[in-house]
Amino acid sequence: MKRITFWFDVISPFAYLAFERMPQVLEGCSYEVDYQPLLLAALLNQHGQKGPAEIEPKRAWTFRHVHWLAHQYGVPLQAPAQHPFNPLALLRLAVACGPNRRVLEALFRHVWIGGGDANDPARLAALTAALAPARNASDDDVKAALRQSTEAAIARGIFGVPSFELEGRLFWGLDSLPMLRDALSGGAWFQGPGWDEAGAPRPGVVRTR
Image (tube, rainbow, N blue to C red; front, side, top):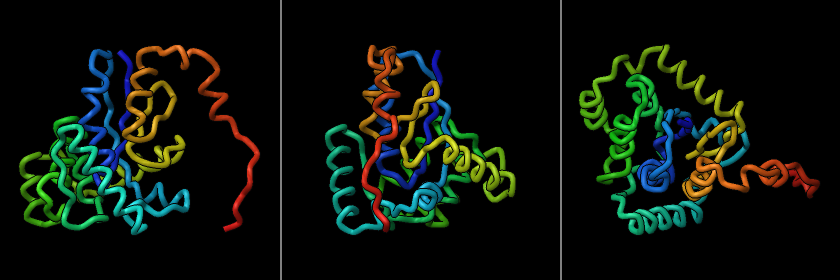
């Protein structure tokens, strides 16, 4: 059985949709999933980028796109009252619980169903009570574990979420799920030089700013 690492931040609607879609797209494959939270903002800082929701035309398109995708997939989705928001409390709660599919389902649906404020104290308290984490999400060791997970993602070359790691290969984005399935199934392209050749560095124009 092959292992997929699913790197996520609950702030991403694409990560939510990928979480919901993965069982359908990978149906019939033999695999297990290791869920790893990370702080997307740290990845963006590492690569000198802004998030989609921080660029107004891109924000408008992103939310139109994800709502259309959710409609196509039959996945419930309502944007939270505030976005972007600080996801640290929810990511630390994931670490404190020990992230598994049940925990992620609760976290993603807390954010992406109902249109509420993801950081509303009463909602966070109710979610924490329902999940009953083994550790306190505000403990230093939990905070350190999230930092270490984020640093590990950066060291692997992860630049966005959702990202999937399979046998040392990284797949980025909701739309990479069919490609992930092909790799998981031993697709012919993955048996040849295509992966390495396509990703090889090439000369090109470099912007100065």
